[in-house]
Length: 74
Picture 1 (tube, one colour):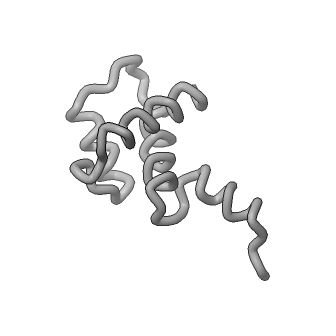
Picture 2 (cartoon, helix red, strand yellow):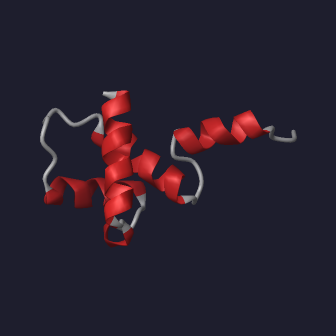
Picture 3 (cartoon, one colour):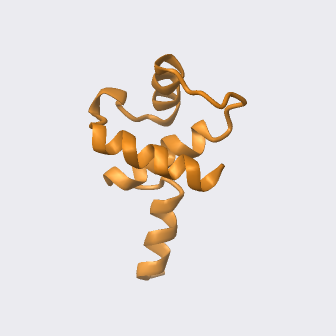
């Protein structure tokens, strides 16, 4: 089956893939399940570890995008 552009966009939105956006979305979806309204550094690092994402690879711009995604899905 050949994937169309919209298929790839949906996959990326749910964190499947290795683009920066997919990795941010993967962590955001994991963190959105948190019962806490405030996410501290330790929880962020644990979420990244659970998702197979290096938490130290995030730039400030990535963290800003993560916050936007969390605001969208929560």
